[in-house]
Length: 130
Image (cartoon, rainbow, N blue to C red; front, side):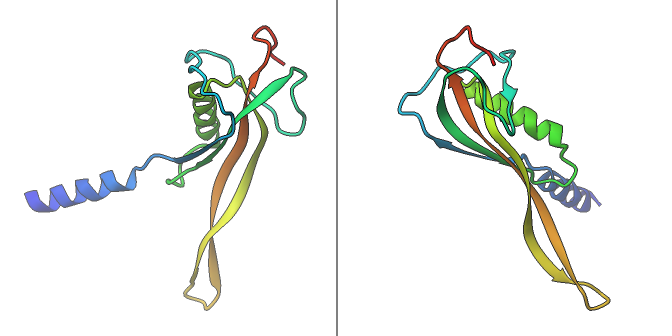
């Protein structure tokens, strides 16, 4: 009984995985991280009015289907802070095809995933925030 419980707990722990974060650095300079309460704006269609430097490309992919989109956006913001950024521009959310499998009735079921991505930027003037 004890062995079964350990196996079940091990499997359950393996199923809870953190999202995958990919970062591609663009800036030649490494910036100090921003404080954890530093505001990070997210821009989808328009760009900030402030002059900025592109710091890095960031993408976030959940590993668990129950991960909320808001949590993934917060993860993007925290990575922007870690990289010394002030905002994320060109933010997008895309559905991806993760795989396919045959169903009982002969059709094919498509497995979809989610990827959030954007470009972390740092404003050239510290007083500028938009």
